[in-house]
Image 1: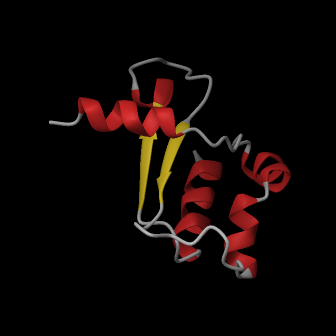
Image 2 (image 1 turned 45 degrees about the vertical axis):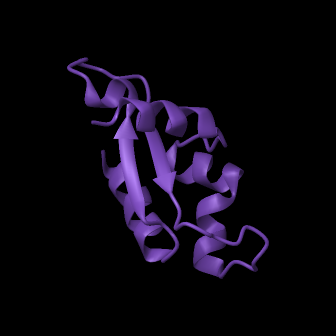
Length: 88
C-alpha cells in the first residue's frame, strides 16, 4: 500500500494528471489481490508531443515505475472505454 500511495503522490505532483481511478482485483474483497490496475486520466487536449518536466518524465519511464513502485505501465484506451460505458 505504501508504494501505491507514493506513486499516487508522484502522479499528483506531476501536475499533468487530472484523475486516478483504481480498479482490478485491488478493489474487490480478495484477501490478497495480485495487482492494482490504475487508470490515469490526463486533461482533455493534452499535448503528447510537448516536452516533459523532470517530474513528469519520472512517472512515464516504464522501467523506473516498475522498479520503484512495482507498477507496470501499459497504454490501453480499451479499459477506459469500457469503464465509461459502465458509468451511470
